[in-house]
Image (cartoon, helix red, strand yellow):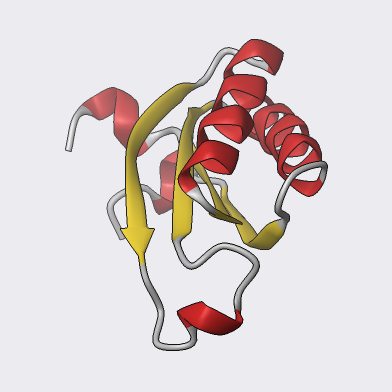
Amino acid sequence: MGEQTKHEAVGLLEVYGLVCAFLAADAGCKAANVRLEVFDKNKPANADALPVPLLVTVKFRGSVAAVEAAMEAGEAAAKSLTGVVQRQLCGCGGSHAGR
């Protein structure tokens, strides 16, 4: 793990569908100075009961403030499309890094 990554926050935004994930990621990156990590894709057992049968996790990295702004923008974009499954922000401070 690089020194820069240790002191950054990560935001996880799980949405329905790949198109929604791309639009949420685009909105988040335009709203704040963040980096994207590789999307995680999952087809759950109850996929037929979902609005879109694929869950995608968008991952933003950057400062806590930047990741919060990206998450807000990404969530707003996702809610206007297929919706948000869940969201989580992990703020990593220097004293907690690497634990």
